[in-house]
Image 1 (cartoon, one colour):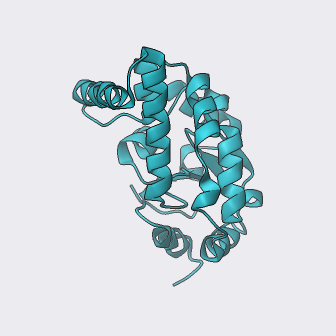
Image 2: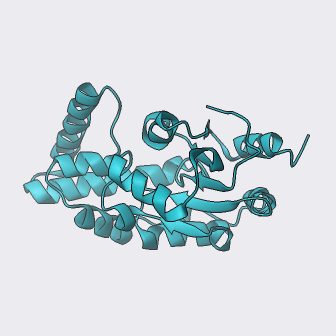
Length: 214
């Protein structure tokens, strides 16, 4: 939902799939979840993969939208802390991510007019590592990770806490993400402007709406 952004003061970005796109890293995260499910059940990795897929399918039928990997693991009785410890142990973003001068320039021009934030289901250590690799860690006023809300997006209470911590009326926000149901549904419901993106170049839409570029 895009409206007049003249009152925008705070831009809240999702991280994975929004500020960068990396299928290989997504696969590493998926495989870490498979390994954790297999270990928790005492079964093979292939059996763990089947259990994870069935749980995700079941949640999709219930909520009519595909759940996040974190939410799926919670459904299987795996604690958030366990899941993110596994990610820190198994996921290696340095194998795939590097300094992104285009992203740096895009965000640097935005923060001249607005405060920038991250709201992600990642843990704080992994988020810091990814942002540092991309070269944009210092661009954000605050990073809201799974530790802050203690529940994965789209959790209404965690979302409310993010809004209250930043402060400001609905029209002062813009939420940016690559998954409508996960990143943008809750803000859109409150009348907050949102932007769905599929690649870094899509972030230029923000600059146009803010009048930074014609």
